[in-house]
Image 1 (spheres, rainbow, N blue to C red):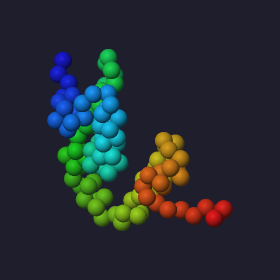
Image 2: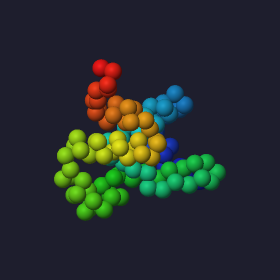
Image 3: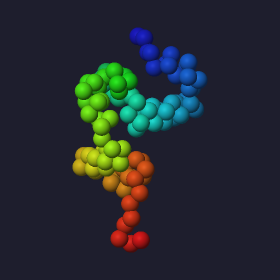
Image 4: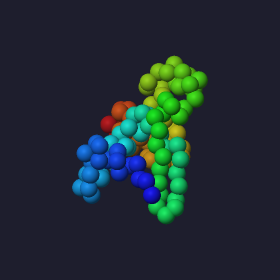
Length: 106
């Protein structure tokens, strides 16, 4: 069975268990920057993911529409969606997206 992720890790010098967490962090960073996206997921016998460049996977019209949105408004919408999906607390989303909020206690 061919495992292309291993060749990517090797070429990027992320070999071995010690470097695996760095590799996962790198993928997370690319995903958070909307540079890549998971486009497929399979569970046999291990959970495997197929990643692709966002611009190649996302319809061009949607990307053009997204480019017209102000970055702060986009970050607000993303933070709200994350909160609504209960994926992450709003405060964590704000920190992740670089949004600063003042709380009533400050």
